[in-house]
Image 1: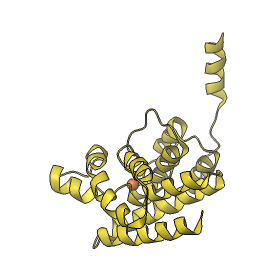
Image 2: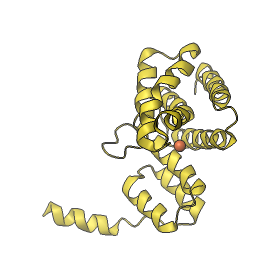
Image 3: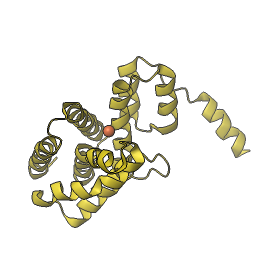
Image 4: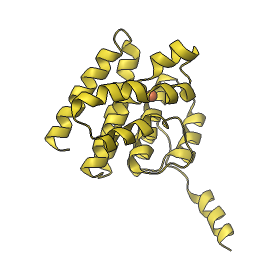
Length: 185
Ligand SMILES: [Fe+2]
């Protein structure tokens, strides 16, 4: 990533950590999700602009959690999607993000628990990175991880990292292929 972009992400990480002051668990979470998102993006060969938006969204994806808890008494995904964009704009504004970049980052924050109509590699990779961390933090079963992988994961890198992390076998595409062949007839 361009050095200006790398510096902005560093400052954004620092600002997000300060914003989440006193909540070490969520600070650890955002650091891990950012690291996975950045790694998948680089290994998948994203262009600089998409990588930049992805990394910023990964840093800020859960920034609405505290306000969701205060306003709705819940940190459930649908509430965070509502409460995230406002504080995100406040953290992005001093760091030179354009209006277009800010809008896309806030849109990603507002959709990071929505798994339908996933368009754009920034969106896809954010979902994968968040799940790579949540599967561990929420101690999900191997069946639950495999099922999410087969429904949602699409990047080769994300699938490899998930399989390696949880000791899963390769995704089995044979049944999907059979279904595709049937529907093609
Ligand atoms: Fe998250």
